[in-house]
Amino acid sequence: MTPEQIWQAVATERTTLGELLRTLSEDQWNHPSLCTGWRVRDVVAHIVLSGNPSASTILLELVRARGNLHRMIRDTAIRHARDTTTAQLLDQLRDSITLRKTVLGTTPADRLMDLLVHGQDIAIPLGIRREMPTAATRVALERVWTADTFESREKFAGYRLVATDADWSAGDGRDIEAPAAALLLLLGGRPGFELPVICAMPPGEGGSWPGDIDIIGS
Image (cartoon, rainbow, N blue to C red; front, side, top):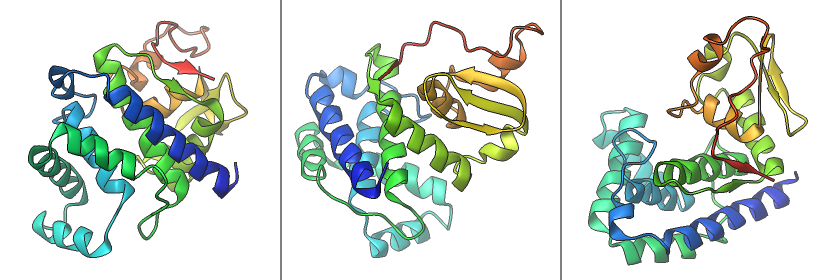
């Protein structure tokens, strides 16, 4: 995908996520997400904040978090979710649809990856099927692997990841075969998509992914 196509995919993900969120009850907005310590509304707050980043604000929040990037990301989302109503979060997400902003060291593919993964962080715990377009997911997989976003190359040393529905593979070793969407969540360390599921499989079964994953690819 070209940078223009990636930004168009980002806009699509924001649009469809907004449509999903507008159907949720307040109880669902407060439901735990796949992100440890984050409710659905905290995930939405993070998506809103990351879609319209400010270098000065990031620096101030990083100081507030004593230099811990992960703590900064977690805490700023929680605070924003606490201080912002559901209607305001929806408005902010809508207003971000056409934004094309990245922080230093990131790319449009990072924005796309963030939306794809966090869309599932919201949908899966609520039992909602949310499509992960295969072409967009392939871009996200490549970015996660090449940028080593989740320390993927170290975690999956000795394995070769192979998408069964896209022209993508990475690594060297025993094959882990799965739809691109499942591989992205595996690399992202999401609950229910852990490597031990693969390691526990009897020899000779080829590392194929279990067939009960509630994710749609297209």
